[in-house]
Length: 112
Image (tube, rainbow, N blue to C red; front, side, top):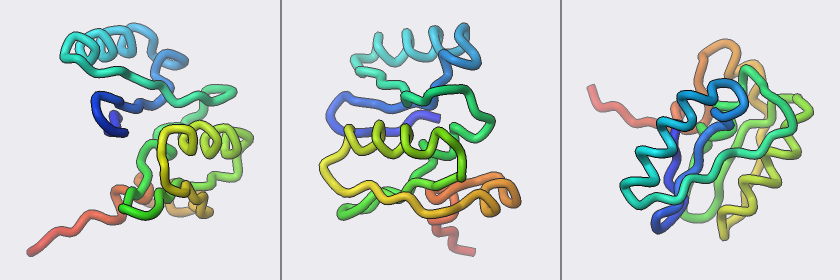
């Protein structure tokens, strides 16, 4: 997953830690298009690291999941460094395990 930060700044999951060949290919493509790629800094690989990037972004706040993992504090600190608005953590371990998505996915509006 790739998220837009601002200007030519992008944010990705920590792909280089669990799939280095994919990360190198993805980052090369994005950088050739003029983007600066920032990778989420976490202390270790987690099966749920993608959920931190699946945040809800509004004009006044960014909401990221709190997964009850050691990486929660690192994810909050790293994501806060990219944005000029507050980054809030809201507990979500059950939500993510049950539905396989996080706050960005939950906030989609689909008209039927």
